[in-house]
Length: 215
Length: 282
Image (cartoon, rainbow over all chains, first blue to last red; front, side):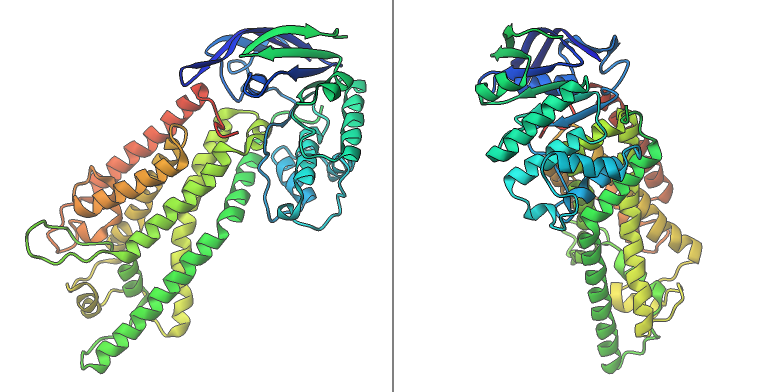
């Protein structure tokens, strides 16, 4: 998979939140977006998902224009801020409910995704009884279930304990091994450099530099 | 690669399940309140009989007419008392609440559904169908409540008793079953679908709370301003020209206005989602 952001600009309520972004993302790499709060990291992720449309410029996914040739990337898993799950359902039931939209992800794959993030797929507790860290883990499981080609994770380590962080790091390394394209952000620079082979520095809606090399 | 195009039926089924899951308590509240209103109505009829009034037994038609009648025309300064139709307000606020909350979640924060559905138009079509189903389910709930009350001794016929009507809404009238069905059931459902679709499409432009407030405003204006262009009048059967209340609302006018607005809402939504940033609250 190849994603190209070409001269992408986005203005929201008069404020230019993304300014002339030119960047290419390719499979088999983990890209880390680094920058201060409100610098445009999440906006970039939304733009790549097709959740926001450009004021000017475009996003190409394998040569197809996002928002014109396709509404959203064909195979994508996303964790952006707080994913909305159903409080009364268990973690497994929540993911099954989501997966039923496509009917292509099996129970086994859902269980695998839940296990990979360190949760128990047979846990009978409802989502409302989950801790903050467990909620975050379930959000990651939702993003990776069915192993999509593109995985976008906005601050996936938020609220997760130390053992969980190691687990998520291993998970991301595995996704890279499987030649998936991972784009993530993380407030901890150390974690970001250890996880990503390309770090993109974002400031005030602009890419100011990139560090590392894509495969 | 597992994730690809979702079938429309799966998206729709998902939205229906989500809607019921989120809203079943509100439908239950609608059911219970309707039952309570029917109970109070039976007590009222019984006490009227004890006071010497000769009234026939209540029929399902009488109860439904009472529940769905809405309000007569408001005449400012005419010295005619205007009764606030609390039942009507409750029913339509409940529908607006169900539609609003349901779509507020589906259209503003549940981004995985949207991405998995893969196609904005498919997603929008599903939202429109679920809106219609939400309204229909609200009416089915009211009918179910009346159905349950048949066990309390209400006669299972749709015939309206003029004497009961006179006791309840101060005017004796009766209607043929087809006339009754059109102005007390079909037209209000069509109008309610229209209002709900307007509310749904508005959520693409404004915050869900503002859209809910907009529906309340429309309903209030409809109560005090009798004109087919103020579409809430379609949910107020007592204003229909078919009834002998000097009604000024013609079925055809309202149906036409509703149909135009329904089609416009669907088209505007379809155009807008191509250009709008979805899930603004994510």
